[in-house]
Image (cartoon, rainbow, N blue to C red; front, side, top):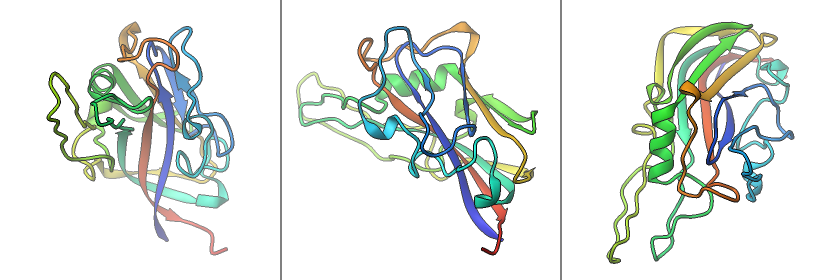
Length: 210
């Protein structure tokens, strides 16, 4: 038995609408995107292809033998933050104040095991397990900088009853923009201020000895 993280991520960009799936694509494959028409693929490599940073699944849609049977104890959604340069200009990837507000105001998450819904809710109902936390300040005139996230890091959504997942059960997360709406980000063309949204499941795992 061991304590483990099961996680996956996708990219949201300006104009994102509809739904995308997480936990269904393994390492080495393209990261799914929620992006508007004409918005291009992100230019930062960590937002393009699944690596150890963005998922630990090595088998599509299943925990497989690399993880094993699991009991899910908590769920968290973390939004990748952008940083600001010395003039208060937002970095080209990651979420600023507007992006965080749009994501938390318009998106939802649903978790399914073997095709059956286990839990669902607005994104803000699943506080982050980690991420940037603190405050920023500036002495520049007419410059606003911020550092926001989905709740205080480390909290997450603790489950009073664990969700059991066999290693060969299909694991599927549905994440989307509700009500036919779309995301309005601070950059409305090109790569459209792309940011990763991470979905982390805290799990007690019954793994193989070797």
